[in-house]
Length: 324
Image 1: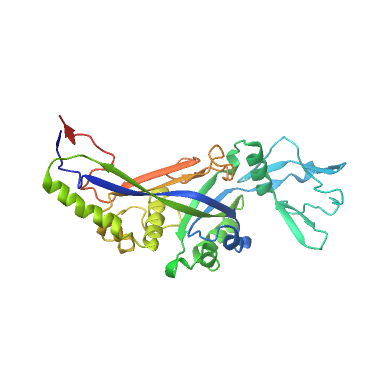
Image 2: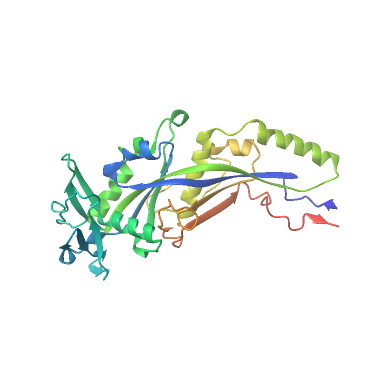
């Protein structure tokens, strides 16, 4: 076989795949939970979805249970899910008498035996029920409004550090209060693992083999700095979802002029990709919520691979490379 290699840069081509492997959904009041539950997360999404409340007229107390129904809000329209759900005592000594639901009816609140106050958000109750029953609820879909990252020096800056004083997050909350009262804001902190992908084309040409050996040395001898992985991942996600509140990377990406991930060009990687999956059929710990934006349809799964230069062939594109 003879290699017709005009567009493929090397015999051996490599890509980095960054795969989501942990996600935590929370609101601004609970940012401190990130450090204990997902301490190594550096990528975050700020999202919105329809406001979910408890239908106050549906609340009934019977035996050891409190029955209730959910309301879904869309602008000036409110829809009730005509199905009873319930909260029941966890232990014989528990009491539901102090569990109340007051305006704006977004949660049940109560007091533990030791006097500690606690709350159960309507949205989280529905999310828990949907995950437990393994059913899909469209109102749990999340619209991506902003994507960011927090890394710092050698990864010592976490998502909670970044969001503790974040002007865009505050603007999103302000807009929700003034323009979108039918929405609730959620933060997703996400972990990603790295996988190396490769493809190889055989050749009997000595010059091509020698060039490929030099290329292999660049790929394997010096791994790009961790911060560059985070930088590229953030930019790639922004380019894919094009969130409303992001400005950079929506259009011009990838580019050799971007210094924040230049090591991937120096090390001669062909492409980088990300994979996100939030459905329960693969991992029972997933959210069971679909992500979407103004340009991306709702889906549990999101995958995108971009070749670092339009001069090169995709590492999995073998068309026209081999002939007998």
